[in-house]
Length: 159
Figure 1 (cartoon, one colour):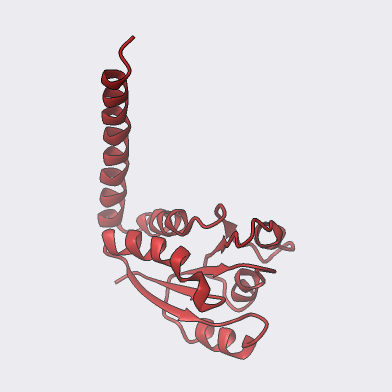
Figure 2: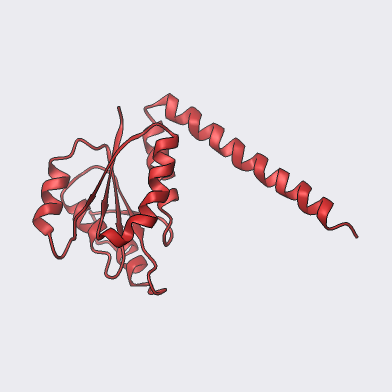
């Protein structure tokens, strides 16, 4: 089974991670979740990453958001960084997108744990047709919802 390891910089990042968990569960992708801080427990981050059998890592962190880069330093597998908005401080976003050459981290929008999981599913779908089918179905559902919403708005706002 394909697997994603979510690493949170702190327990307060859990609401953002729950968005990812919902998507991963929907697509039947195995996942683990741990809390480890790039600054307070760097040895733990290294141990988790190097000891993991995950195919992809999702690192969720706010404030300086060093966690995604730290995870990427310990693996050649894909790392997706999810910056947490907190008090609308953009430091987390900039920390994730401004990685040095040779140690890339894919970045999704502030608090977009769901998009991180979808990106992970897209990467896994390259070699797993079942996940690819679930992604296709998911996109069809989203399109149908937009059309339904449009029809509802049109009927609600008759001029």
